[in-house]
Structure formats: C-alpha cells, structure tokens
Image (cartoon, rainbow, N blue to C red; front, side, top):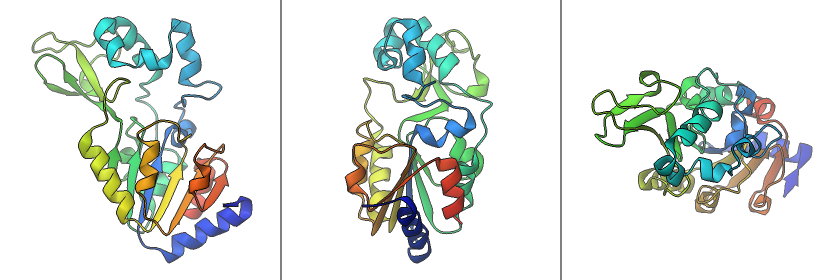
Length: 242
C-alpha cells in the first residue's frame, strides 16, 4: 500500500484517469465545520461520560423509549449543530467536475448544503423528523431545539430520522450504497475510523480500480486500500478533487 507523497500522487493520477468516483465518509469529514467526532479529544464519547452512560446507550432506541428526557438533552446539546456550515472538504466534493456519488455516515446534511445532489445518508439526517404516534413529518426548523419535542397534531414524541443504536440501517440506503460501490471506478474513503458496522463493511462491495483512504489516523482496514493519505481531509480533498 502506498503512503505519504506516493499515495497523494497516486490519488491525483487516478482522479485524472478514471471517470466515476464513489466517495464514502464519516465524522472526520465535518470536524472542520465544528462538529465533533465520536472518539477525538472533544468527541461524543468523552462528553457522554457526564451522563454516566456510554454514547451508545445515550443514542439508542432503548434510551429514547425508556428515558426520552435524557436522550433529547444529550441529542440537542451534542448532536444538533444547525448553524454549522460546509467546510472546504464538502465544497470540494460538491464542485468536483466528474461523476461523483456520495455515501455518508454523517447526519448533518452538510454535503447537500454544499451543493452535492447524489447523496446516500446511511444513518439518516437530523434535518428530518417524524412523530412516533401519528407519523407526521417535520423539518428541524419546525420543532423546538430543547426538551422532548411534541407533535402539534397529536402530542406524540417527535424523533429525528436517524439510525439509533439498536436499529437497523435502512435497506434502501444500504442497497443504493452497494450499487454505487459496485459501479464506480475509483473509491475514496475519507474521515472515518472504519470501526462502525455495517457501514465499514460496505467497502468490500467496491469493484473500483483504485481504492484510496484519506484520514487523520490509520484504520483497522488500511490493508484493503491501494493508498493511504494521512492528514486533514479539509486540506487534502480540495487539492485532489479539482
């Protein structure tokens, strides 16, 4: 596997020689927008300790059902960043001139805000919400960003359309992601630890001629890739997606 300057040169070369690109990303894509990742120094796993619970428990369907007050207190304080703006990495992906299809594990909607049109959201989005009782749909702007949001029609709890721990990923989103990975010539995976399944396992659906990882740190699946470019995705991606 190529690393360092060789990996960066390989990535630039592949961008010129292959037409279709699959782009899979994770939390590291949005840290430059002020959104914390899960395992960093200021990440979600650390702030969860204030509640005396793991973030997996706090963001689980069981917590939502059994203690919605704690669930939403954590959710509003640490997962919703509605003022965040796309960073240079999002803008680079959105402005890429060749065919590009995005698969994201993020729930922030920043790819679409940057202008990307073809985006598969594996874990849903905070921008979409629905009532657990009557199924009425609400945008993030239509519900209060504090406490337990209630449906104005029936009084039921309004939950975000994100995949919680204990829930399965949406079958259609998984199917779309697998199709993208099977059909693309180049795969770039960026800003993800590749530790969260089943999303991490999706890379094995790829039939790409070139597979490149761009991340701040090595991952357990580094050996799968042809090249590993280590560094800040917000600095690297604008340089290569021209």
